[in-house]
Length: 249
Image (cartoon, rainbow, N blue to C red; front, side):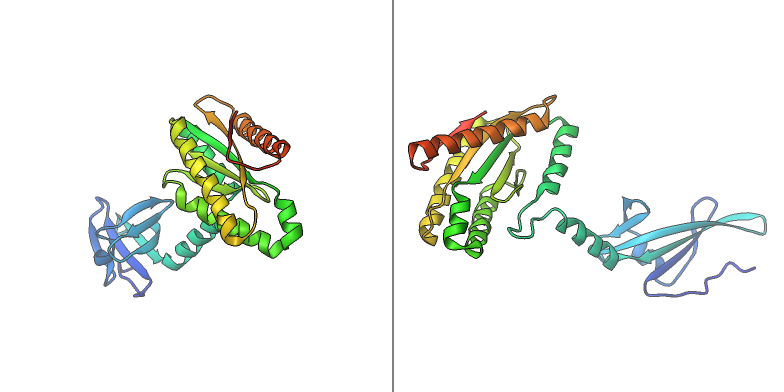
């Protein structure tokens, strides 16, 4: 038996280490690629210099009563990028291209796990069924997409806005400052109305806010925001006009 390598591949790297972990042999490009790799977990490693991802397999070899470790690194960059893309697409609403309910669930789990506080804001478009009936579903879909684009441009990088129903959206603001949230939502209400004037369609939104803090029941707090939004919508409807107003839970 000889401790040698029979494979030299552009997408595979072999290393042979002694029992102390010292590299005693490698395929041609081995150490050049692996000197600065970062451990991603699950036997995946990332090289920031070459922007490549490698999957590692390791076996133990006993030769002449000595122990050696053979490591095989396979370039899985394309597979990793494709998987990352698929995971990203699972959290994106296909129509509006903003976050969806899966993204909300992931954000919720992070917030609960880290014990964070946040404001939940439920928002839906007033008279959206009538808009669809009068202007058609193609125009209705365009309104949803344009409103979603407006939302995504206003929320901060640590916040989230997601489409969670037909014309329903959920904002998650990572802040304790209620006035800050109200200012942002009032700005959004104004810009939605301005968008409606641009599209020549009467657009407005109803909003409900609730505050979530560590130990609260998330679903209950979201339901409170949803109820406040519904009450806001009914109040505006009874008054005969959808003017700017925000309801708290």
